[in-house]
Image (cartoon, rainbow, N blue to C red):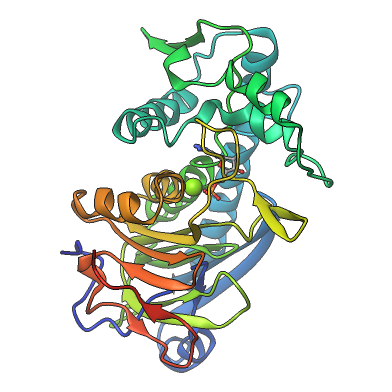
Length: 347
Ligand code: AMP
Ligand code: MG
């Protein structure tokens, strides 16, 4: 069953979320009353982030500004490419990390590594680098280079003890790209709440957090197809994160084959089997980590693990264009029958 955020009569769901019908709602429902709709967009975390706040006019704008500032602060902190950053120093000079926020997220990441037997692993950084996904020209490395990389990958090499993160192999490097965006979103939402906001929506390039309700109604979030722009389906949510992971975000093609940025830490190659996984959970950070984890675990195992986690649901689009959902979404996700997807049979 889905947690508080869902309603049985949800009208549908999809990959790469999209917020539906906001404009009409804003104009009609709110401006006539004492509520005000404030919407701002900024380029952040490599994407356009839009925040919409519904509330008394005097606090909305300041709340969004503070939430954006916090989001920028956190995304800077987790940027492992910044030579002045704590993660860069840890990766390149072995400087221990004592920052409580990085430790908090790293601990969650390690929990999920253990729960997924290493499918989710923030020590994949050398692979992301080798395949060129930090730059503009990613390319297929030679197999020997990939094998060499694997020698220095493994979450077991990270040690958190007495508030300090260290590593037992100097070549271990971390990349929190699979979880940090969700943490940034959770922090922006926390700021909005602190400022007294009870109705808001944060959309970070298709990763969405719905805070409260949109007035009397729920927020309507659609899921976009991993190929093309059609909406696969949609659903209504409150206090819920809808976070997508996909082979369409960063990829290149070589001899007709697609290579993307989510790696199997055991093989060193991009994972095959899923083209998009959208995770629904109350905590955006965990929703983000688990979308990557599901992607790596694969369609059967990924869905099976999510079924065991209370309040968590997933929508998977396989690389054969089948749609698979966890049982809590069976009625909640309204499928767009115009799309080309078929509903996968239960194993
Ligand atoms: P997401 O879009 O949330 O799935 O995150 C993708 C990012 O996670 C990649 O760009 C890498 O930085 C990182 N990543 C890739 N493979 C893994 C993995 N197996 N475990 C954890 N993080 C990964
Ligand atoms: Mg993720």
